[in-house]
Image (tube, rainbow, N blue to C red; front, side, top):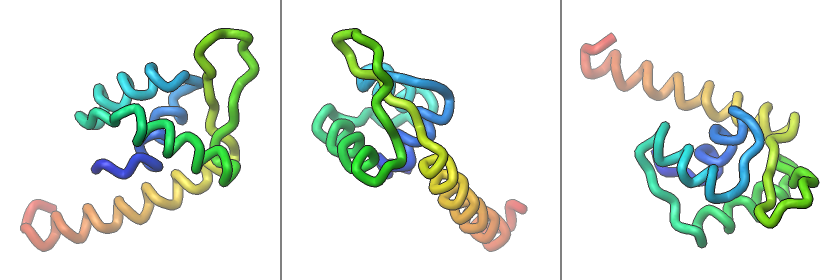
Amino acid sequence: MSDPTLLVLSSLAGGEKHGYAMMEDIERFAGVRLGPGTLYGAITRLEEKGWIAPVGSGERRQPYSITGAGREYLREQLSDLGRIVQAGRRRLGDA
């Protein structure tokens, strides 16, 4: 799984983070290292869609949080992925 949208939303579902912390978290839980261009491009798109929002911190690094709409989108996508995983496992005889 290397979809930056789902990776960033999944990271932020665990709490507020700035970009570098997201990169580290994503690498830890998904084994995927997003480059800065990919990460910040995804952050921009997610913010434009209203799925994440900056958190006023006064710090040099800008933390973000997932919004209600972002949580709902993530839930829908994970549900869809779950169905695909189940079907694939059944077909492989692993279920």
